[in-house]
Length: 121
Length: 137
Image (cartoon, rainbow over all chains, first blue to last red):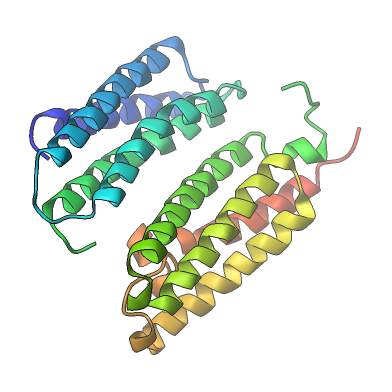
């Protein structure tokens, strides 16, 4: 994939994950600041989904297109679900839920890049 | 949460259980989506491996739902199946390499997923055991 969005998503996810980790260590629930951060990440992920599909439609090289779209949609879906799922806890465990989801994001971006690069699934 | 903390049905989804369910849900999504894609686009390449991927996906989905709902019996059976599956398929994939031309979630004891699939069922069974011990009010 071209453009700055994959790198941006990776960096924002890792920064938020570091923040979440600090809050886990301090035994804090998910606060407003972290939620705003996840909101920013979500905007970047929606932009990644749109530009990813546009780039896919404008390209004719051979790669697993269904898998590619699956990863893009999955990446958009995970943070809001994780945020909602984290809300019921009043201590570190809700924040840990968010931490797990945030650490999955760079892996998904990496897989997206691999899928985009080649025909070998 | 409206449920009291000593409700054993709710206990599986509280505290560390919420994190455990998050990991299960991610594997449910990953394994199911992967197996659907494999079976839809290239089933003939490695039918055994892809059927096992689908089986693993179903196991993760049922484990996730039963942990959320507090269905302990279903969770225990499913997660025990998962533990046996990852060990047996992990070993089989290394011994009978020709039967596994394409990897499953459990191939090589889940090395493709940082060995999380190998650890997860044992954490799950430990968690079921631990929350069972919570005394009723």
